[in-house]
Length: 77
Image 1: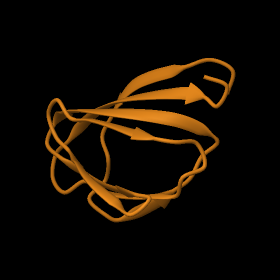
Image 2 (image 1 turned 120 degrees about the vertical axis):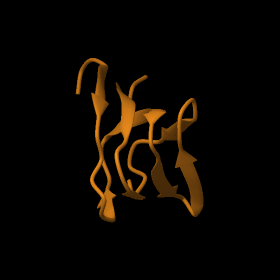
Image 3 (image 1 turned 180 degrees about the vertical axis):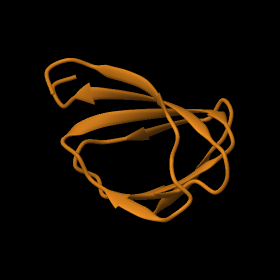
Image 4 (image 1 turned 30 degrees about the vertical axis):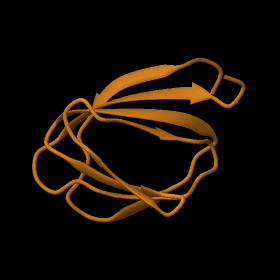
């Protein structure tokens, strides 16, 4: 990834695990996203900002309707 990416996403109602080579910032808009990374659980709801560092394994679940702004940043940032 050479430049930042920003988009609105909906996450599924099942537990998923991910890891990627870029940083992410998640900002809750509607509903909720349960996010666990580095032993820390964050409930991403309206107005809550959650950072994810590049390379961190994270688990997430989004029960019900949800909408999250996702900003992806290259590692160099």
